[in-house]
Length: 414
Image 1 (cartoon, rainbow, N blue to C red):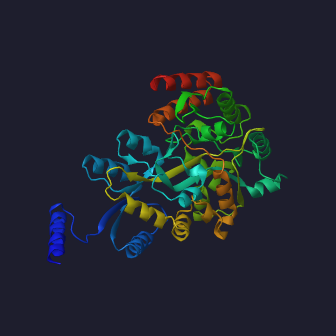
Image 2 (image 1 turned 90 degrees about the horizontal axis):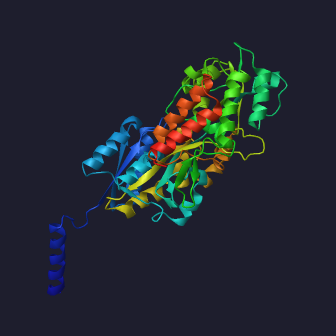
Image 3 (image 1 turned 45 degrees about the vertical axis):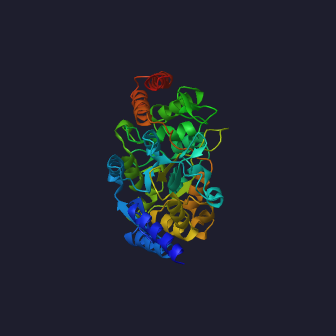
């Protein structure tokens, strides 16, 4: 017995000298980005519930405003003290991969959780490897003035962009009513062009067999037709609001909220704005239109949770993710944010059978996200500049898209 006690004492001393206290809890840090609508009490409740269920883990959820979390992560990495896990804009993933701080999350998650995630939200999957799990998703779809459609004898909302043009021509009555909204001023997101090119079965880049991005393809038939149609809405049929090259997303939303816009292609936040400002007209939702004969494909933008390679407690981090992704916790979070659910099981709940969520969930099933390439912000800016050249009549759609593709391939070394 004395010998056994001596061995235990030696082992305990060794653990103490190595900095690991006997019986010490695992310290786990999660950088959570503050979402509008989610009360701090929810985060506190989640943290406490997990810690009670896992007495060997001491979870700390650090709430950080969205506009500073990127800088906060960079400074924590530079200081050698990054969190174990963090919410990120999925578009930041390649930056963190280049810094070699991202641990592929797929190999740690349970098969049950992986199978329960909506496929369209898996934007953090690169070359077949899932590096981060989606935490929020924002598909885009169509808002329309149901009362105006009814007053003009229009029944169902348009299924195709060609039908949308026809409906816009019927209801367009400036300055009292504009047919369809168009963001035409350079903006951080390239949403308008994305709606039309995705709806024409096109994309921004060729996709190589290994999942990597090849040459820019905005100047192929799908891209040029999408740009031509956008320009026709503005300059040929003139069914948009005036002076589109000066309109940002907020401007177009405000026109719809004011009651002077029949169709607006956007996300769920417009619904919140309409209710917040007490809009008295009748509106409804529909899937993003597509070009005739092409598959329906919406734009979907996600945020994700990333696991850091430097974490010494990866198993504990995954244990927390599996805990937080139980249906009850995810339902409460999604309900607060107003986003559609990222889990298939949550999407089946009665709450998500409301018209707006039914459209959101259906939109995600065939949606695509932004290209995950480090040069994407610059590429987006180039395409935006060429779109404005077309709207202002300085270039044809083909010339503009050819110039955009050539410049993008050049900066990417292709």
